[in-house]
Picture (cartoon, each protein chain N blue to C red):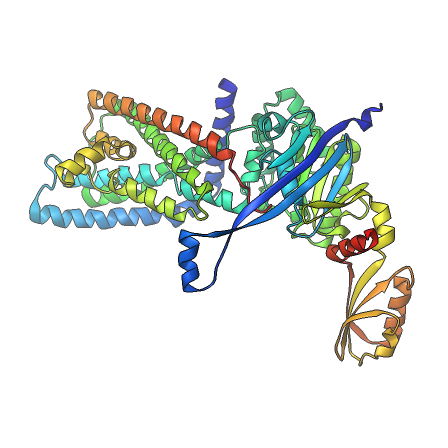
Length: 266
Length: 331
């Protein structure tokens, strides 16, 4: 088991190393764009707060903007996972992976996890600069940082295991871009990536807060702004439960699907 | 029984059919495709029997869509046969894929496995972990392979800065790191120029001879395997058309060459009356010669003395034509 984990962690590590070799491509190709979105929203919230005051009770202007920074950093970090799996299937590239002594989908999760860590830090850094210049900083107690990191890592992992389950449908559908699109919009809206779920009508808010998507964006981002050990524990446990739930689905679905694989280019 | 003659792969009655949608034309076709699509069944592999001995170098040759890659993918366990049996080292690859992956190395043409932005050594180190190689054994193995493939001066340069030939050497080292007993090469020469193809052929021969690896390769171009293949399997429409020595095929069917010539002077058809002319215009001619009857050097000498030639191309007969002739002979 230990050597298995070691194997997969090496896969994450080599992807971190590779990401670092083209870090400027990532910054110019992706991060700057996300920082721009944060800039636009920061302006938008400034206007809204000036005319209406607090949109959500207890959420100040700077909290709203920083919420977006964390939400963006968490959700966009995993990249277009579903599409990447779809592309592997479409191009026949999957043949390279299936002939190795590892599980293909676990391999992909660890690849994206490695790349995701770099993306996450870059968006946090550049988005943070924009947010700081526009609305100032927020207070985070140093003690909470390790707990926040745990929740952030689990948020990324949860996002990846849900994406993995969805990506398996790419074995049936010829083009996975649509799947990727639907999934990313789900995390935008029900996950609360852009705005806290409190802006929705109470019923929608309750449903969205229960659904797994919100544990990869809304709950962790809010925890950064309003930290309590009790909330941390709640989020931590539910994250683990959802991750476990999707891993079980993934396990059975993968076993079933891999028998139906038809590798392209035969 | 000699060790070299041990059976390593056995294929019995292998069949695989693919189901594909038939696209109907027109507006009504669009709706029909969505609600009641018609399917076409393509027999990709149709009742193949084959035994491969340890240390053999076998080439699967056939036109595109003949079923050679499908066969290879079933051998590596990533496609499941509809019927028939495959045994590799006594194991069924569709059930023991992971187990067998330790004994099999693969190279799928145009699907590189090296990390593009990193030096090859990083990919090697990762593969050592993926294949659970013991540190000492890995270091020793790597040292040997680096010497064998002469890559010591490039393993620390990013892959993107290497030439195609250098990359290929490293791809081979990567596929051989775990010391596989069998190596599958699916269209390894696709998209390569003549010089790189030559390097490739030399590498394949070297691995087979020095490492004693059993190699199965596929290609749609019979010229690819000149000088390397000991055993040739020609596949067409999912069936084996020929299984035997490459030399026999070469003597019998590869004596024909296809010549394409562009000249500055008008071409006189009388000069070509004993040859099979395929295409002709004022300054261009395409024709077939049998080198047994008309030695290539004599034909070319003659052409150069008679005409001012601006361009010349000499090609092997396409595999489709070779297959057609084999069929004709069998009848």
